[in-house]
Amino acid sequence: MRTEMLVIFAGGNAGGTAAADVLADANDRAHETEFTVHIVDPNGENLRRIADHATGRGLHVTTEQKPIEVALADRTDSAPLGIFIDAPASIAAALEAAVATDRPILLYVAILLAATGDLFGLRAVLPTANHALAGQLATLFRAISGATVRSGASAVFGAEASPRSAELEPLIRSWFAAHMLANIYKLLYNLPPVSAPVEVTRDGTAAMPLVIHESAAAWDDPQALVQRILVRPPVPITPGTNVVIAEIGPHADVRLHEARLRRTDRQIALRTASVPTVAGIGWPSLESAVRRITENAISPAFPVEMTD
Image (cartoon, rainbow, N blue to C red; front, side, top):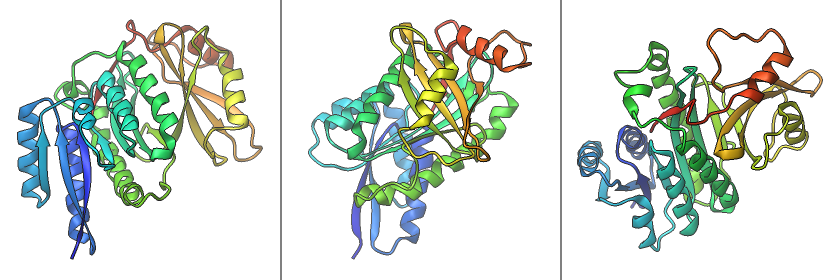
């Protein structure tokens, strides 16, 4: 007899549908575990569509038409929460609700920097022991919410997306799916995840750990910030790995600093920053790179677009 394992989905659109396929495929291969899904979304049409799809794939599905933070407030279980939401303020609310109800978290979202066209996939796996980081992640998404254009999936992966983003979509979706399959059993059995807590990718292949840092009073010097954090990083960093530091600064603007822990000499090198800039400005030197980081930030003037 198979043991049913409940997973709660926050969001019933494209990201949730792709995750339902991951769990349905897992059920086809599993011997003793069968995933069931409870899907929460305030949009009734999304719920109808994903429920039909998931049921057709053989999943046992229940639905609830509410915001996720309202739905979780009435629950007493500890089922993992998968977050597939395209609005950053709602992602933050889902993270906070998961912390309040003491449940592990999986999170998947794509973020497009509208001014530069840089596209990131972000994935997270947070057991209940890592709720402090969940709070940091909620703070990051609340900051990003003030700089998000609500054009939805069409601008990131849909009809209005660039050819490059369209090429990246299946790669990022596969990167999400592999992560979910690798970690969901670990969360269900209260075992350590196999992935870093929060990671981002540019290409759906290379995973870069994401570190969150708050500089509320004033922006930190990028080189000094990177050096200080990576001398003793909050998560293990293998030499030869790139790391992204999300710095939340004054007025809740955000900068993304990318650095590398070099393999040869274990020194820390500031590499790039995925922040908006004037078109045509290059990177002739480290000094200009640092100046670009210092002068620009993700903000309402340089927004992002997001999709689940």
